[in-house]
Length: 92
Image 1 (cartoon, rainbow, N blue to C red):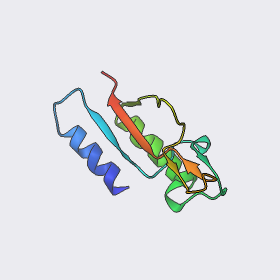
Image 2: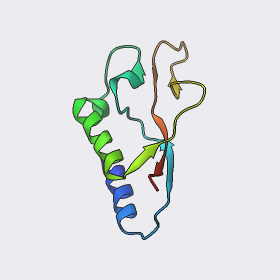
Image 3: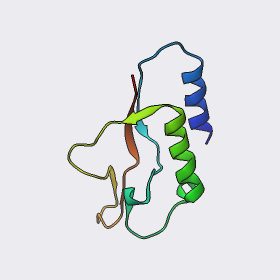
Image 4: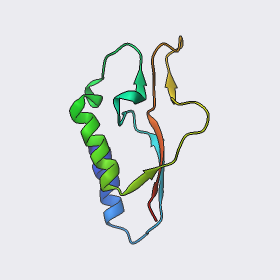
């Protein structure tokens, strides 16, 4: 995904060692991060899951654990929910 490539390029072009990325990446990393209608969007197809995990690995990032709710996005009736928001920090 273009956004992930841009973020990786910025990381590679800087000498800053400690960083934090916060955002709605609109993608899940594992199937257990989505509950609901049983469908997976185009971005989150099995290839998308692998691409997203590879991006996080390439960033050498650690996700901060969530406190409180397990999911960050809900449909109004809460039957579908996903963890699409993340806080990632450098491993240093």
